[in-house]
Image (cartoon, rainbow, N blue to C red; front, side, top):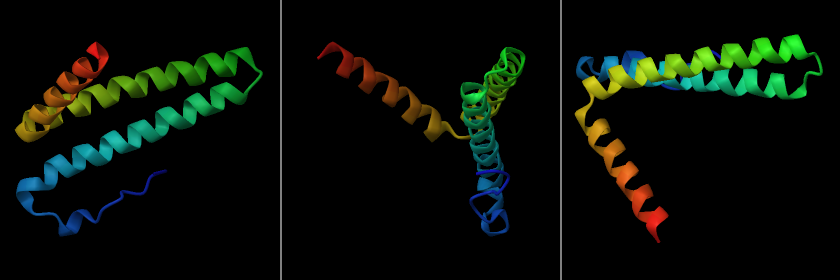
Length: 94
């Protein structure tokens, strides 16, 4: 993503806007996590690696914060998340 919101928020109706803003925030945080973990993987400097991994961990917390809000605002998302968990449990039992 690298700082570009993948949708035009001006075209989103007001009822959906907060959910889309949260989704854009989640995408940005996941993008940052990927970047920092990739940079940590290629550096040979132990301090730099440690800092990148620490920052990536903080970004994961941000994902959790945005997701918690999204699940409050979007009950369908909450339901589908639970169904996804159940499907994985079923697959693990096979």
